[in-house]
Image 1 (cartoon, helix red, strand yellow):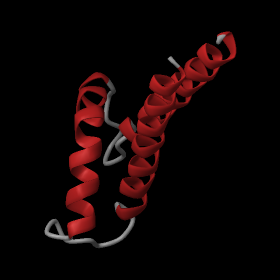
Image 2: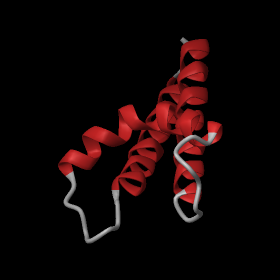
Image 3: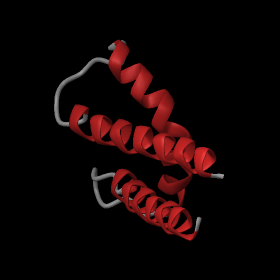
Image 4: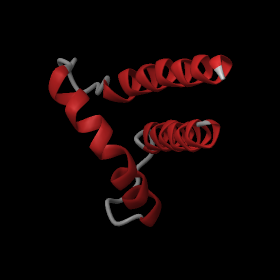
Amino acid sequence: MSIILDVIMVMLNIFWFAILIRAILSWFPVGADNPIKIVVDRITEPMLNPIRGALPRIGSVDLSPMAAIMILIVAKQVINWLRSLS
């Protein structure tokens, strides 16, 4: 069980880091053909797209990365709690 929780925690950390990179890249003029942007978009879009549909958009501000990071923080806390039970 511990190995499974470790793998899940690594995946959550990868998602968190990818969302952070995506947010930082949005501040700079990066072309859509940039390989880093393509990889980060492929990693994060399955998580951000449903959140984007549920959250209202405030002008040109996309709040889905912030909501996704909060969800990931809660998920990591649950994983840590499950680890403490073992």
